[in-house]
Length: 482
Ligand code: F0G
Image 1: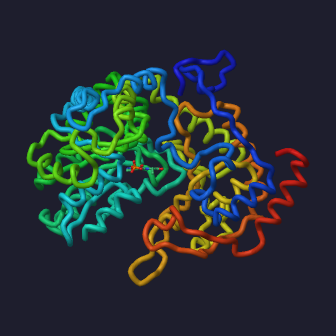
Image 2: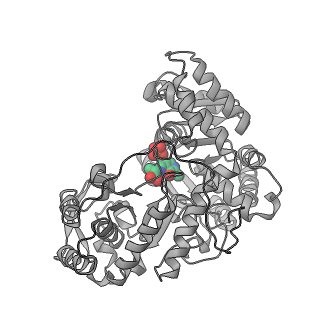
């Protein structure tokens, strides 16, 4: 809820920034959108940005930077070793997380590669509140496996549980006791749990997880990529943290983890990543991989300009009026969609607005990728690019069978400070129209299916001619409107 109340009583998320640099957008006519979708193999990852009106694919690396971030980028200290820019970033991380050691990487999954290579041995298990695609891939690549120990409510799409990202402590304890603590590589907690709709964990839950880790001598690793949203929700929803500053909450969380890693494409609103710890042994173990895979220890694959932007971006993340912008826009969009009867994930989380495709297109079986089909259909009728987060984002098992996802979501990411409210209203309008015409949407099937992370570059086609019927109905209803 915005702190600024409207006299009308309306709940409007008011922007606490002004827009001074703009980028012209293009909305191609519906026939051209259909052609672009066909050329992209019904995979929104393969669309060209010039064909996209609202890019809601992700918030990764596309959040709006502030004037202060842009200014800092101009005075970056460019050197391979010992750059002043790196020292600034290292000090900012030390100040915010209270961690002594910082290893820079080019982005979040690079941290996952290094952490997995360092600590995941064949046959080990990594318990986590929920997996993320790249996280799971790196753990599996190193011979480990993941165990998701989310609370039952996590998979309830329409819930009022404020912390669906919490870990189930009994399940965690059970898993450790039955498999043996020596089989657990580490415990991973993901902030703003991505794949279940940007849902947060509570500080209280992390404190309990820490206790279990201490009891069994296990490391607790925090994926802080979506920490900004999680911080906002803790401040809003968790009683024990209401009077704390965002900085204090951050420090409380950081103190509970042995290792914190993050994608700075999300946290810090720039591009890059890093691993932070107070444990010297752990640091030394991971250090050699940085120089092997990322770059020298004072840049790790990041440009100095991006490092300057992250330093400022992290500081700005400690401002409640900054981190509230994403969640408030998402909440607005979610509420508006609920008013139109569209099935969405509740409570509204961070990252984006999540549409429940399993219900939206309940006539499409999971094997025909309902969320992927919905993403394609939405692009065709609106020029909005979302992302499938369902079975298409899973990998087949060793026998080649589909791994049916727990959820079929269409994620409409809300890059922070990028869209205006009228653009969000446009999105709501087109989604509501699509919902009324949902029976026109059909399934998809693969024409080219990569074996790893297939959702990135796999190509599909429609199972029937549904796309042309959808366009015909669009033209009948919207006339010559784009
Ligand atoms: N962890 C989480 C929770 C993420 O959301 C991501 C990226 C990563 C790790 C990997 O970071 O992209 O910098 O290598 N999520 C992006 C998304 C891709 O669109 O949700 P990365």
